[in-house]
Image (cartoon, rainbow, N blue to C red; front, top):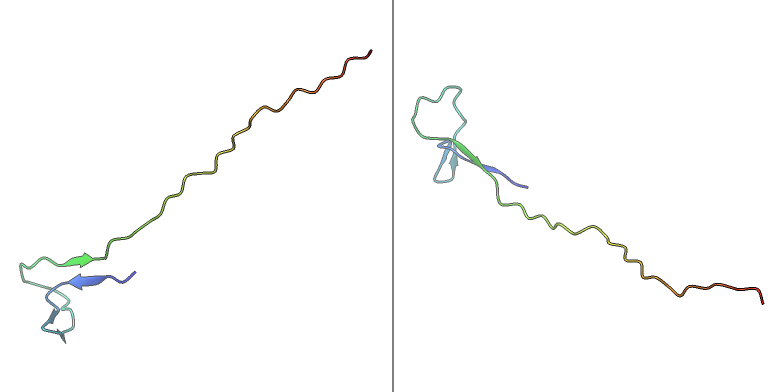
Length: 58
């Protein structure tokens, strides 16, 4: 995931090093793109009753 800073360190594509102390009032925000996660439900086991087999001695 690529993140980028929305700071005043780069203007018009020209990179400037970040100062150690910034005295400006501009907020500096680190913004990352939205993440997409696929959540799959857990497997479900369904048991159907089968025929009842019984033997009676004759």
